[in-house]
Length: 609
Image (cartoon, rainbow, N blue to C red; front, side):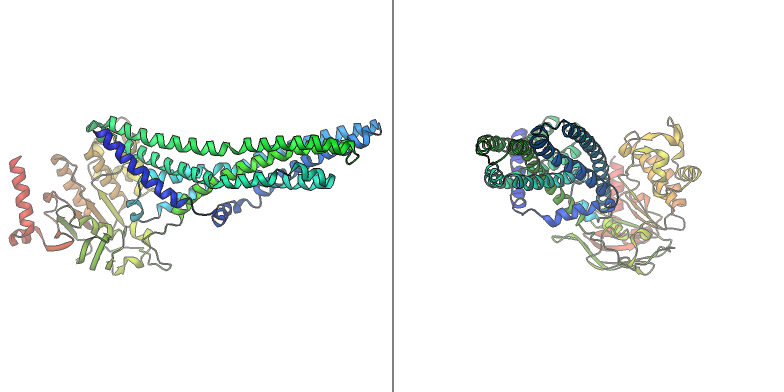
């Protein structure tokens, strides 16, 4: 039953993606977008790019000159006149020219590869840096896997274009132009005869373009789906195994994998049709050359050397045409990848920074919400004209049921989002008028789900303040009580922890996040369910550490465990994005309102346990 449901869902997903694809492929080849790609060559326009072009021109000129020397000079002059000296010099000269061509090709390949790798490096760095500065709304609507595909796979798809494609395309165009000019100079009639198939070939190849482009766009979409599913599958492996959904997960991946395989198969099949077609055109041209060329020789229309030169150039003629077809396929792949890359690069942050934004050199920590309204989408308002005042150095708590707006308030203070209406101010400055870096450097956020990076424990604590000394890191860990468990580990502070810190318990990860926040020395500290994953014994240590951590700082504590907020200066009780009541613990208990009910129900739950 589960597999049938998965197949049904798979079918729906495929329909949705093909619907998107059908609309995307109707766009014409975007030369403006291609120009945007070529702009990444600009930093190398005085070094590797001209060097590669010069090396390419040298080898191309040699290739065009040698057949003329062999046919028109060696055969029609030296051999016809039995001039051995001239023939000897020609052989030596042609040998030297081939050595020059060899050197030109060596340096062309070397320089275009260096050029291509530098461009790919710059493009990937630009995209990653841009994504880092996008607002949280961007990440809310996209999976990590789809973002990973853009930064890795799509940019890798451009590698061939920049390492070989552009220079080779230029070389083939110059070669073709040179051959056509030379053939018409040698014999216009024979040139027209051997190239009579060109109009038909270009007509048929043009007909193939839309289908080829459609296929490569489909490849990109299917790759994105597969990578997104892989990322989710690996991140959620524990959940998958906990609910014994391995077979269903594998079945779904098989469908995604099959779609990816089929898209590649279709795209390569269509692309492979071009080369045999060119070879058939070459065969037709050769037949015309032999039959019509022999007729012209017998009737004195051309010399044998001219015929030999034609044979050389005809063999050279179809090779660049074939490569141009492949280059076009390469451009289509690059276009489909660049569309997805520039979609991200054109994404503007929802949280914008003004040019002359205020810089917080020192922050007092006074926070004001002035009739703030906020919604994540148009259907649901998360905050309804909230007004509150948090004095500097004050500790306040936000309590309420899930979805009441507590974390939204914390997100607005860090300016991960901007309010829909009203203003959020710190020290009297509207956050829309403040430089983001200077704001966030003064704020530390400790979340319930602490993210631990791959690296050592020392590096993870130092993350918020990279210039901190080892002793400062150790001191921060001691203050929050993390030093004991760190020293019990094999390598102490140099213990390597994998991504998300799976070798650590939830409580240990939380203690590291406290040490990280303390080391950053913020003016404002936000604890978002920061003690939810800590056992009672550890909580006692944390409460002691919090006294030192919160001293001299403005603190916002979001907690369901109400025992952690009893000492707060002010407690705000929220429900459906509105403040129901506020006051300290004693005042709210005396009111016997919503807060009293929350405390009472929590104690009843503990008694039941």
